[in-house]
Image 1 (cartoon, helix red, strand yellow):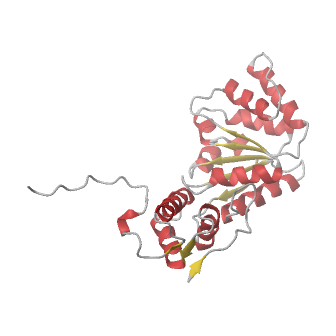
Image 2 (tube, rainbow, N blue to C red):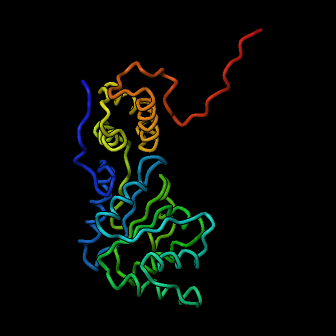
Length: 253
């Protein structure tokens, strides 16, 4: 059996994977909750599961604001990026002044979610109380995205932990997700169903690795002027698994 269909699950050039649906459901849960309920949602999981991909999809669909925390960010840098994302030019002032500016900017449309990617870094820098203050006073739905241990880091700060409405774990991709990614990254190319299953297995269910393997398949098919790719075309060790490869063995002279 082969797979080749026009994707019905695109939004802004993205595929609607199951993790995307999970994240969108979390966004809508927060938007629908009353002011008396906690306003923070947490989306957590291992690297490569497509968390950032889900956030970008949700941003396109909902008009959410999204900031991705950098390793070097300070409180000031974090607040300035929120303001810039909200279309405001940060004014000079103390951290308290910038925090007030961010709260006012977000409060202008408290139905517009704020997505904070790489939230682990805020936890590691003892900045969780800052996001609690921003959410509590602006009342915007706030989505925190991070690695698998993010919930434990949040639980260590009780005042933040108590303001989490829902915890949603990102899951590995399945065959349907892999087909949707194949639609997006290999348009017009016929892929054998067994090959799609092989890509899923070799990628360990991680969306990022699936995309790498699909791109490699597409490039190979283009170089060979092929429009159909089947199982057996690639050796077992050809697929990208994320593991470093050893040096090729030299023949003895």
